[in-house]
Image (cartoon, rainbow, N blue to C red; front, side, top):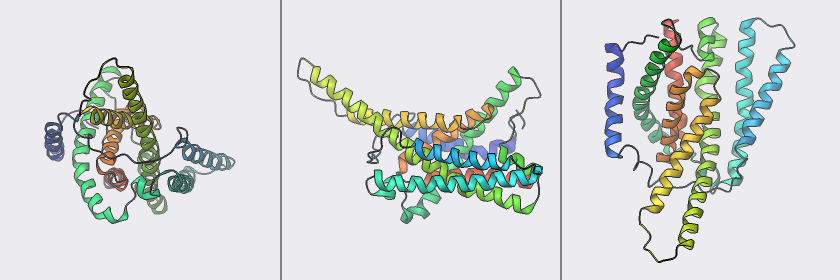
Amino acid sequence: MASKVTIPDLLITLPGIIIVIFWLKKTSFGTKALVQTKNRRNNMPFYLPFIPLLIWIAVFTIQIIIKEQFNLPEYQSDYLDNLFYCTSATVGMVVIIFLAKNHFARGLKGLGVKITNITRDFGFALLNLIAIYALVAAMVLLTLIIGKITVGPDFVISKHQQLQVLTKHHQIPLIILVFITTIFVMPVFEEMLFRGMLQSMLRSYLADRALYKQQTNNTSSNFLSKPKANDNKKNNSRSVWLSILITSGLFTAMHANKWQWPALFTLAVCIGYSYEKSGSLLRPIFIHALFNATNVTFVLLSS
């Protein structure tokens, strides 16, 4: 990775920069962006989103422990790792579907899975991705500059583990499995878990706390005053943004490479925003999958 901004870099990110500037102006730097978003009614307890996460970790860990009993070549080991990602994520998705049907109003539709909107969500995902790439590229560049100052002039941000696998191995079966894992399986599972379950739970929890605090303040007031019309909207917007930020932080922390965290956090915030703005879980899934597909394609073409 280069730390200098080249003309091709500018040409690629310029449309996204224009979209971001327009969005900042239209939403007063994001303060008005999520005022009118609808809540996803659910009765999830605080711990519920962590159940599929723990099940995914447990299933994956058990498979890895079994695999370690055999002295496998690196190619076979990487192949099994991806196979384990798929199987454990599938188990996690089944658990999430079961929980969503039992804890969300309207079940999966309440979670935001609406097949009738698939074409519209895919189109908006492509448009969103243009802006997201500009923001992620800016964070990558900033991280490179800081890394070169603090670590040394030879500093580079190492590739994601899956991209490293594609660089090391060129066997078609492994490439196909990595393609399936990173573009189809993991984006669906991670968005169902982090955005669908965790972000929805946090949003409801934070909104309830804000409402309780507001009611308590009104009750304890010694004089009558007219309630401000924008109070509920402001509280709603704060709760939504805070749920996005907390979820994005947890999502980012799940990745081992700390130098990738600024870019991943930026990506996660954008994906979380798209979920709240659209009310559809398909849109963040498409954004995540397209982002991964672009990176995988770039590695395959350059290797």
